[in-house]
Image (tube, rainbow, N blue to C red; front, top):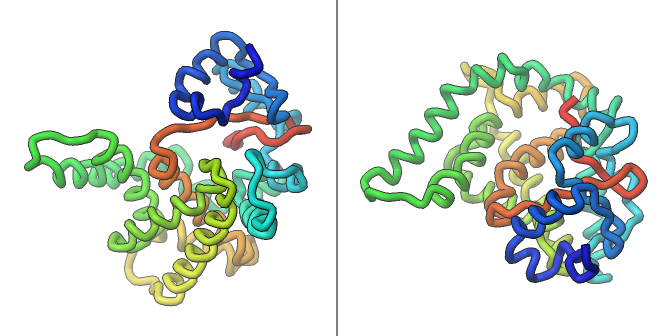
Length: 275
């Protein structure tokens, strides 16, 4: 692959990432980017092999590569914000390997088991129906804007037991937080740090006002219960709650475009193995 095409952050690639990663998958599915000192694994079989070998590939990017300068570069004055984002993200269980990863997942294992996921089917169908009902009188819809974008946040915020009226704020905060991963702007870490701090303040307010009530425990109840049992500390509760919301807000933050990267254990991360 020619050197000019090796820049995954170029204007041309960002304008049409599908062609770029499609070409990588066809011509060089295990590609070393000399410019960014990063492996990009795009072939399905190769990706699955990486995900199934955690002894060789690590999810601990923020722990193992914390001293590596952000790519693309950030404003030097934002270094303290980058350090804050890295410390916070390092508490997310998807950013860690066993045994820490396994310990962190344990309280949620039953909730997100195949049986638990199956029990959510009705709620997810209701969420889809509510979005379709909202546009039925229009006679047409933008599938991406009216359904694909709002659905993940609607479902995840419901699983967390967060108020429906707060969803616009949650989406705005997720967009800020995800700047650290989905933006190329030199001030992205400053914005991400702002989003994290605002989100933590929101969750602290919400948790102070939360009452058990006569209802089934939601994901946030499980996380708080695990903190009370000594399984999590407060930062881990906040980081993993926001991690779930980040996954629901990512399509909004990057317009549905992804940058699939897998880095070797010596150079960075592999994505969550789902062990």
